[in-house]
Amino acid sequence: MTKASAPGKVILLGEHAAVYGRPALAAPVQAVRAHAEVLPLDEDRVKVEAHEVGVDTYLDEMPDTHPLGKAIRLSIKEAQASGGFQVSVASDIPPASGLGSSAAVSVAIIRAVCEHFEHELGADRVAQMAFEVEMLHHGDPSGIDNTVVAFEIPVLFVKGEEPRPLGVTGRFQFVIGDTGEPSPTKELVTMLRGRWAGDTEFVDALFDSIGELTNQAAACIGRGEIGNLGPLMNHDQTLLETLGVSSPSLDRLIRAARDAGALGAKLSGAGGGGIMIALVDDSSLEAVDTALREAGAVRTIQTEIGQ
Ligand code: PMV
Picture 1 (cartoon, rainbow, N blue to C red):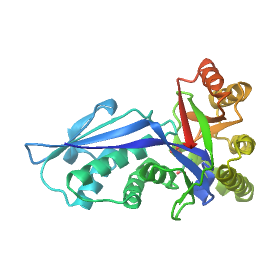
Picture 2: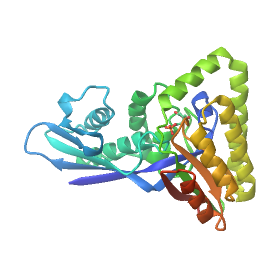
Picture 3: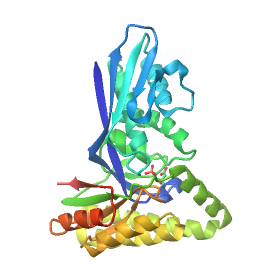
Picture 4: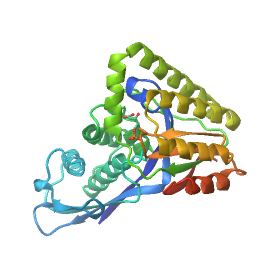
């Protein structure tokens, strides 16, 4: 049996603007992971099991548009795999929440199948293959999810460029709050595409501002300036609200985090629901975590970058 896993991810700043070539910052979330196992099978078919999403079938019965099927087919082609085997998938990353569940599942599958057939893969190739699967989820992904999940390091990401490792001085702690409502990435990216087409100058100016905040945030993180990062996150949230991608439940959690002493808080991922992220220090971490749960978060996850 061959096993592989991949972490969740969180976008620190720059979502949506990333689709339009502006920089974004993202980091792996090690507390939640997707897992894939490959087992030999006594028949000449590929069996696929993902009980959490009701999949128990054979690859040749899965449509081309099924993300799990696509990840397996790409892996078979890449590793020149042959014969029958079984792929089992499980994940503790909440789907459609902004935590990169789909990218993590793809990366775990690609790694498990390729390793099973002794085909070595670099993180860049894994990221490329997972990107092809991401294309099924929304037609115009920036590539940030598959990149950070495949490389498992904090990155400064610009669409179409080599990801740059994000330099971190000191330790930055975050609490993620999950609204429990789905974050419909495709719908929101499509909605913004419409707004951008209708008023390109205005929406581009917002994206430019988000890109500028993101570059400033990368500099703060590189210099260990935790106090300066929070206001940049808050400002980014204001711009995301102007773009129309926040939601009442996200706004409620963001307010609760700030009131409980977070240094900054904003939605993370596509928005509309899903997760928000709060920057905390040792003195505010537990208070923010508790406040988020009291304000209705269905789960909180503590995560950090640096050391
Ligand atoms: O996959 P999500 O929901 O975390 O969204 C990714 C971030 C977006 O910028 C909204 C889309 C993208 O492809 O970059």
